[in-house]
Image (cartoon, rainbow, N blue to C red; front, side, top):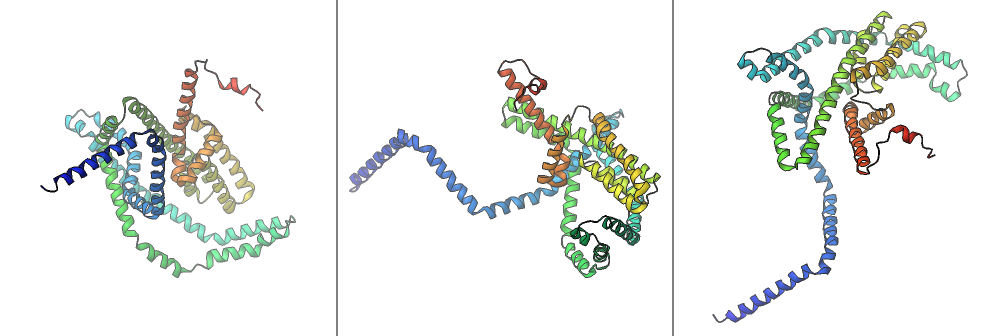
Length: 415
């Protein structure tokens, strides 16, 4: 080949260039520059992600929208797993081998029947009573308006400053009620209902997927659990796997204890408040009792605000003195007994958190997760508290010092 020497020369030059490049990348200068090159590359990637941030966030939003019904189903499956497991233990007491083998399936089917019966009971007994109470409240609204205006007139007799008297005058309150009650634009309401029908099909489909996924998760719980544990054991070290399993068990225990405690406590508190309201002749005793039982799931704030709302309604309907005042004393005494005696007894030592930490936790949960964040704040914060306590104990053992107590530090004068 006439061009063979040329090709051989080019090949030799390429080999020499490759050797020089290899030597350059192995040089001390290149090794010292490598962290800066990686940092520059990361900055470029971050800049591109920021430039395309809208596309990135939209993709994440669509992904979570797609997963949302399944996440909803998983949450309900976790909650319903508590009674389902109890039913499964009862079914296993039947010594029939087939029933024992299919005990999980039978427990899920029995739970579905119970839920349907409870829903029918609510629709036939509780919902009509609630609707009647709301209708009664609407019919008596002018009376409540007159009551509030009487309160305002009494306040204005105490020489309230002019700017307060302007907004707390009978005319101002009357105008507020007129706008609220009599100036409804029903065409706007109908228009919003029609617009809302556009999302009805999506909401129904979402609910259907959530129910189906909840049922399948309940039935296949053991298989999903075994698969997840096997997968994590395969990708994590043994020590990491043991640590994660340890705290997952603690978190599960915390959530179970919290759901159980708040449910039992809500039933007790709601029943007691319903009896008190019934004794004082409130026509809304059932509705207010149900509200107090439900808001009790929100730690610390729920029962306080629920009790205050019940007292306010009682003041409107039954008068401030003596009915509302005496009922308020009794109801807040029950609420304090519940918060300081009954709940700690039910919880035991599971959530040994200070009231300040509870308030901060619930506030942070509300800020980041709304109502759901408030509900899950306490079990999650209890886990973080355990982690910090164990870290402190580990560091004290590492320093090889005697384990101190809180009193040892409380005695020190540092400010």
